[in-house]
Length: 136
Image 1: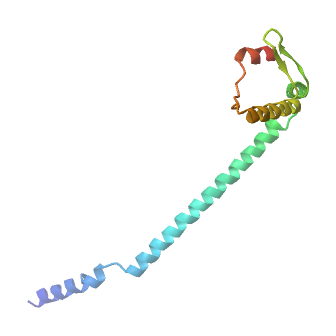
Image 2: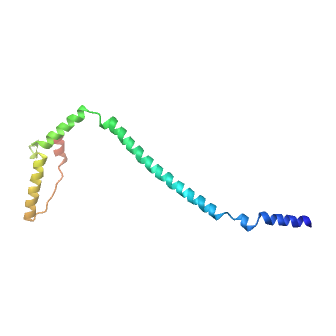
């Protein structure tokens, strides 16, 4: 009988409710620590992503965009000439090109005249044939 009392006392000592519960302060500390670690990892990942995106753009600019290209320079000169000079796009259809600055002035003047007359402004997209003719 002594043996069974000893076993009962032994069983009660190791399995008491206070020993079986987790230490709430420690669990809370671990949870807060893990939350902070997750935030630090997320912020670090975001910052690294931004850094690598900037570096990729810098490399792209250095290897592709910064190199002089004769074809690109010729295209820029052609575009600049077309934007700054008048010309005939399609004489049969009566389509002509005017310099951008002149075109802006004409557009504004025409819009004001329409507004004064009570006519709504209508902007019509150029026909595809007109843009093809200007490319040729």
